[in-house]
Image (cartoon, rainbow, N blue to C red; front, side, top):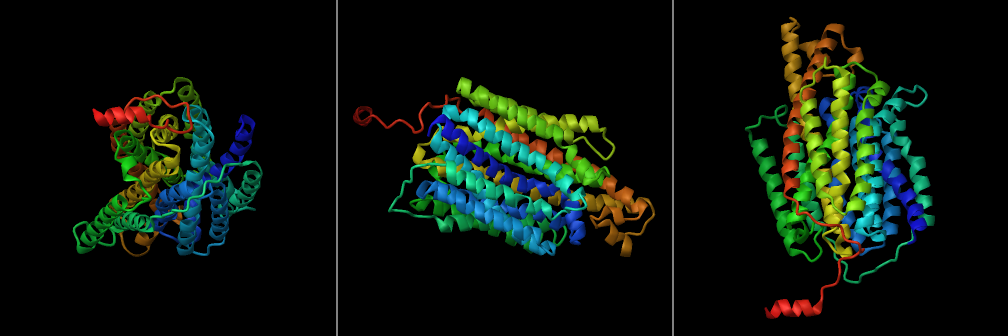
Length: 514
């Protein structure tokens, strides 16, 4: 494809990627209002986000492998339709159970769109040139992730729209993207007769991760940490993942190629991506809740307060992408980004319900800069190490683990937040002399803060403010792991060709005889 054709197709890719990414976070600021309107709980609050992330995570490597086997353009169009239909269904949900189920289906399309846009781009552009275009992709993904709360807040606060339009708004954009890509995207279709799809591996991975996340959500509330339920879920989840690993080592076309992710560079890039994934999703989801419940702002104001993070991501991803293309190196930018990310998390770990907003904004800006400098460059690191025939599976693997980081981050941090908030509210009620029984207990567990009596409202706000800082302390610890992993990445220059050079038969013969 010529440069002009690339730009035309890229406009459609960026549009559909923006819609897919924004769907993950557009509900974050509106969620207190949505869950309040549907009479949901804190656990359901978390699962409205987790359901889509889990489905997206589990399906990502499948879509990546399918992209290596079938027509990439057709797969992209199928994914757009799945996403659009599920978005409509979410908008018509009548209770939180329906909403969680429809969000899971939406996650299938979301995972497909995230990985297929990267695979299609990799099929058009060489790794070195891809740094510049990946900067655009990274900027769109990050702005959508961080800007989603702002748009969701505006929609939720607009009386003639309401929270249901947080889902309906995706439909016209997906229709436009479908038409644009149908006209501008032209890729050669490579059909293989020996197609083999690893359904068992994909099912086992999804099941193992799901069991562990369900355990994290309910442990400490519905059953104790030391209980037969804990033993059954943890051992069962780990066994499922162990069997999945064995399956992946035996099948001809593994959904997560072990021979790719077991190498030094991809393995450490994946580990670092887990931390970045948690930063992307955990930050936007729980900061939106912090501003509304912990600080008392409305959805629109809470969305506006996430702008510093959005600015940080937008500028850093665009600038670092151009610098990577110019220098051909990725590791220095990834390291600097993760150091800045750690500093941002460390700052957010100290916030409470009275922290000045200037400080909170500064810490959010640092988190945004860190995510922008590291997110897409980690994808580029892996894409640079594999041949074009494996670009889908490799991209799917790192996107899978990044999404897994986001899913685990939201689920684990949500469970920690719920437990911490419950204990802090109980302590606050006891200190104020309010019995933790009957109506007071029920009211304190509600996310419909506006309906609470004033004394209980203040106790709930203080509890959420304190608990938010606690979960970002955990985030800072995970960011340290990501930084250490990035430090062990092997320095390498990005190649100038679409594919890895074919091995030289003379060199192979010489090495064999030696």
